[in-house]
Image (tube, rainbow, N blue to C red):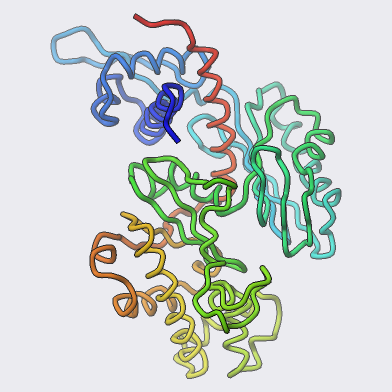
Length: 401
C-alpha cells in the first residue's frame, strides 16, 4: 500500500520523539542530524508536538557564537499513558509519563479459573481504580491493553484466545463500558506490544528490519520494517509458531500438526523432558521449566538431552525466519527465554548454520532482550502514545510555508 503524506509525517514524528525520549535534552539541529530529516521538517514537527503537550522547551545551549539553541525534552509533567499486560495468571498495569518512565504500577493476581471476559475486565477495573485514585487530576492520554491470542485491533475484538476458549469477544467495548475513562483504548497481543516496546525503548530503536522472537507458552515473531510494526492484512503477521516444520508431527493447540510451537513452546519442552524425567510434571509450568534449567546447569543427562532436542527444532524454525525475512536483528524474548535461555540460546545458535542460508545468517545479529522492564506493558502504553500522536493530523493541520 502506498504511503500517504500523513503516514510519512507520522513516521517522521515517531522518529523524532524516539530520539527525544532516548537522548533528551537535545536541539532541533541534533534531531535533524540523528533522523536524517531537514531542520525545517523537524522544526515543524516539534512545533506540533509542543502544541499537543508532548514536548517542551527546557532551556538553551550555546551554539558556538550564534544564536543559542532551544533544548527540547518530552513533557514529563504532562499526561500519562497506561499499559496493561493481561496474562492467564495476572493483570499488570504500568503508568508512564511522556518520557516513558514508570510513574505507578499495580498487579492483580488471577486464578486460572477466572477466565471469563467479565472476570478479566473486573481485575483491570480494580487495578485502574487504584491507579486513578493516585493520579488525581493528571490526564490519562490513552490506555493500551495486551491480550493473549488473536486480536482484531480495528474493532477491538479478541478473535481467539485458545487458553481461555474466547471467540470474538468485543473486549474493548466491554472494558470501555466498565471503565468510563473517556479516552481511547488500544488492544493488541503480547507479540505486537513487545515489538512496539522494542522499537520505542529497546534494541529495535533505529533498526530497519527487526524480528522479535517470543518463546513462552506459545511462540511467535513480531516483525517491524523501517521502524514500523508490520501487522499484515489481518494483524496475523508473525504467527511464526504456527508455521509447519513436520506435517506428520504432533498436534498443535491451533488444530494443525507439526507447528514450530508444538516442538518449542513451553508445554512441548516439558513434554520432551517428561519422556526422560518425571520432574517435568511437578509444580506449575514455570516451576517445572526452572527445574529443567537447574538440572541442565547441574549437567544432568536428561536435561542436557532435552535442551539439545529442543535446540535442533528451534534452529530449524529460526533458520526459516532468517531465510524468509532476512532481518538485521533478531531479539529473543518471552518467559521461556528468561528461564531457559542460558541453556537453549547458545545450543540452538551452534546448530543454526546447518539450516540457514549463509547470506541471511551472516547479516543477522541475534541477541536476548536485555531490558529489565515489562516490555508487554511498555509496548501497550507505546501503542496509546502512537494513538495520541495521531492527533497531529488535527493539531498540526495548518499549512506551513
